[in-house]
Length: 260
Length: 260
DNA sequence: CGGAAACTTGAGCAGAGTCAATAATTGTGG
DNA sequence: CCACAATTATTGACTCTGCTCAAGTTTCCG
Image 1 (cartoon, chains in turn purple, brown, yellow, blue):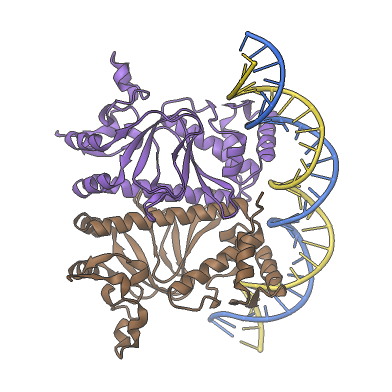
Image 2 (image 1 turned 90 degrees about the vertical axis):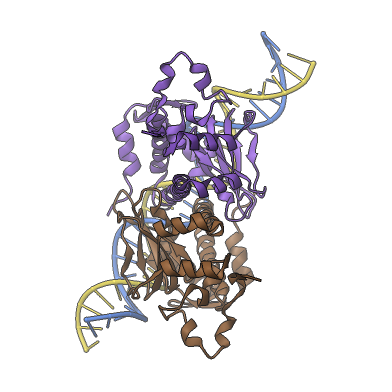
């Protein structure tokens, strides 16, 4: 068997003594050894092909909280995979306000907004100290021409971005404040779970303002909804630390759109 | 010069006597002769390459109003370019409601929601009699591996879909009913103008219900906003026929988000 | 021509926004 | 390390935009 399905090599590998080399804080770890590759690169590639991908990826110094990964209008050169930390993507409205268009967690890929116009339509900002892998897009395109699996993977990534944007559109268009907040909490919970972290107890990396901006709500409404969820024992909220106490009930709230 | 920039061959070509062959209602017209190719395929391709693309495209019988182009959950095989008519894309919410995620006009491409999961997450429904070109995706992928320009074009198309979804997110998240309706009217106006149709006088192909669904408003609110626009002489509204009487004022309404 | 679907308009209501005051947390510089 | 400023979050009172419900009208299509 000359192929290595990297999707099946999951993070249990850090039970080995060599945890240093595989730690996601270590900027030098290669794609093949990265514990996040099941999320970021869930395709079968020949080991040689992984090495070729590895070669084009640039790993820079970590971003500090508030630092920009790229700015609106900047020439588009790369997409980025998050290794640690959280990044928010924002676009600027005609009136000059921010619109948060997404939160990106470790293993997720952002920056694809820039492809069409050859410059970024969004800005990306670190919400906390964050390490990213920079993937130069022109070299990725070249490599994609040689590796059909990689081309398909990038089509797929962009398609996922489209479907997740459309889910947000539905959320904004049809759901109440309670439903929106519950949905966001569940989304973060699920994504944490995929990374083998707790699905019920986690720290929100973003401010109430960012949550409200993302969900089309005011900061006050977000705060009130969280207080209400706490009063009804769905959650324990301790500033940014969230504990989901009643997952089923929270899911019910999230899905309870005014059904006919 | 062995390359033909098809983007520069615009619809003025129908001044020739041979308008039959180039008419967008004729299902047999080739990509090279299609008057919409400036919108749907705005890239430089070798004439031979256009022919190769042409060969893989299937042109079926027109869809009648209300007919499905594809259903949610159907296996993903193709993307579609619209030749004539209008298609709406909808997704189904958890509660079983429709969410309109987009309106597609002639020259525009839809169906890319299905790539990630290999089946469509949306359904597509004709709002009026419509002709489409079906582009089998697997063959498009193969061809993209040979034609870097085509690969880039499809990355670009998907990126455009992402940025336009994000604009809708902003609209839903930040803008009032008036601003949302004005924005949609202006979007249709602009897209008509690109197709060399009137930017000020056109027929809305979708119902008030579809508009409301798309914009996150009720049918009653859409109706009231249009009445209000008419009273203030921004528009003349005659059921689905819209005439923009004061384009500048309408643009002001559309951009007037509560700026700080 | 008749029934259904689509649209318009009005009255009343409620969910989320605004404004405002206070509290808690974080960051900064002496 | 503490004190002060700045930012962030909570909570309350009031307002307003857009929703609900309802009735009536127009348009579409068989």
